[in-house]
Image (cartoon, rainbow, N blue to C red; front, side):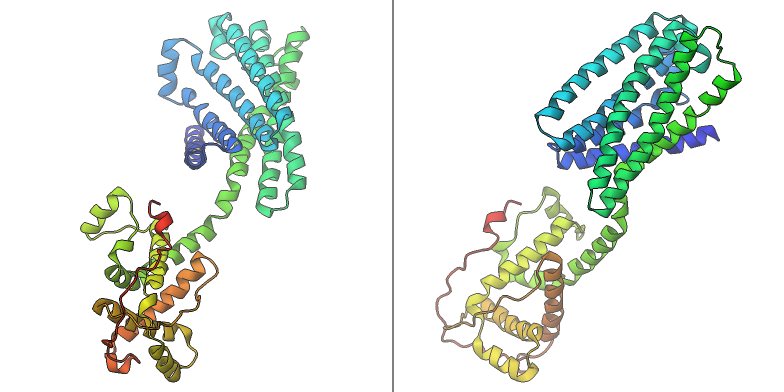
Length: 417
């Protein structure tokens, strides 16, 4: 049961570390995000040397090395925790304080390493075990580690409570409250273990097997487990809480992407030079008859359709608009569909209009609402395209054409995106 729980916890920590590293790849200059990624990586790496199979390999190098690595990585996670809150504040004061904390981290790790290296082998195997805390090497090791961790947790807890009170966003406030509870649990565990270590080191009449010492030391494992899980939960909460909404939005965008397909293909056939450059694998995937959906492809499809609508400006016939309004009234999508169907036929024959109709700015207020409007236009255009030219409010393409001049492209500045 303990092994299964350890594996589940480790997988959760590894998942959190991978997610934060992917976020950091997108924003490499984000210092608070870098600190959070450091915390998650440290929490994911810390239990690795003590896992079955890995522990035997590490212990084969030197007995007790797995416990030393576990404690060193845990102390480093405390520094990243302070780095997160210090980086969030910014300014010269927190930056100087973080430099001092880095020096304190190196001193604490050096003291821990020296105390562990000079200890007998039975102490090195479990330098922070309850049964070894009456030894001076174990006491120095534990006080150095827990002293730095206690200071770091107190520092972070104070900032977390302050941020939680000042936060206005519900998800951020909830996340900071979870982090504050996690830090409180870890601080209780740290103070408990440090108190036991100091008591055994200073009071000669106390022994590790005394009932009071055993009872107090039992608070350490559950507080560490609860604090670790809540800490990861708190940092990942905003992303996890928004996941259902992002899934629904992604599903809607996939449907809009497919609905825009016919209109997009018509526009691309009319203006092939306006196609934006895609990733390297896009051409191969398209030749194989398979084009995966991505937000980038969704964005490109909307932009290319909008750009070709602008390019069709010389072919908009005001007579078609007049007849369409007489037939369908003020249904703007239907009128636009009839107008564009006629304009696409004129574009194919290269017969622009002498005095083209000025198409008003229609559509949505943002990318998604505009995509929904364009999807409705695509549906109407397919319906119009299935009708004969005589019944679709468009007359024969006139021969009194003027020379077609190129219209400036609205995507010329983002062709490389």
